[in-house]
Image 1: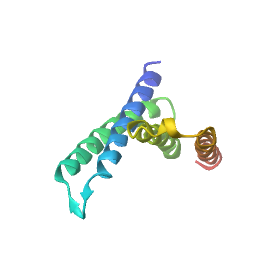
Image 2: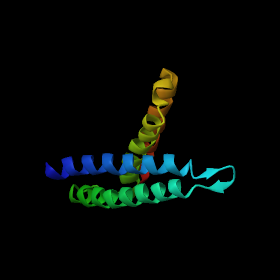
Image 3: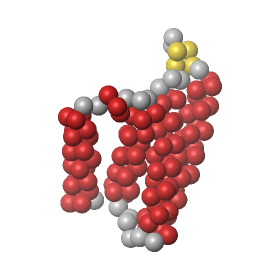
Image 4: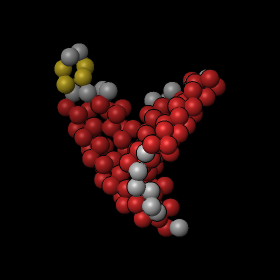
Length: 116
């Protein structure tokens, strides 16, 4: 049970940290000039996200989940939702948008289960 909880916690942690990294990366250029503060935050969040992701892989592998595609799919879902929450755009999504997002994740999950 501890591996399940740890995998969930580290997946959430990694996805949210990387989501912050993506948000800061999108702010790294202003008027065609680099904004070093944003670059620094980008690297810091991505580095922390990678560290957390390595623990995700550790606990998932203990559970027998070794397919890279499945491990990545879980991270991807958290990261995309994390960016939408951080940017406060999730509330603007229509029901159709939410359905499309669900279908997209389910579709990748289908491919992973068949070929990954």
